[in-house]
Length: 70
Image (tube, rainbow, N blue to C red; front, top):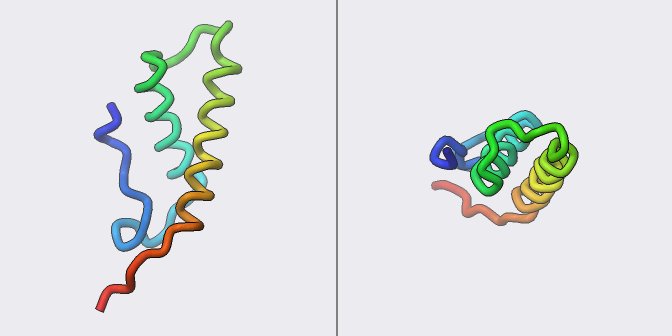
């Protein structure tokens, strides 16, 4: 499942959208939790984790220093 998460930093991705961040976070949470779609009683925790991971990913990508290509 996590094999479909794309690398989201240059030079692999020139532009990264909020949808890209959320899709990667969703794949991660699905893999870690073992749920493709959580039961109603777990939906809030599942969705909160997706949002937190997407936000952390955005902060990570903003902080990374990527070498310029020649």
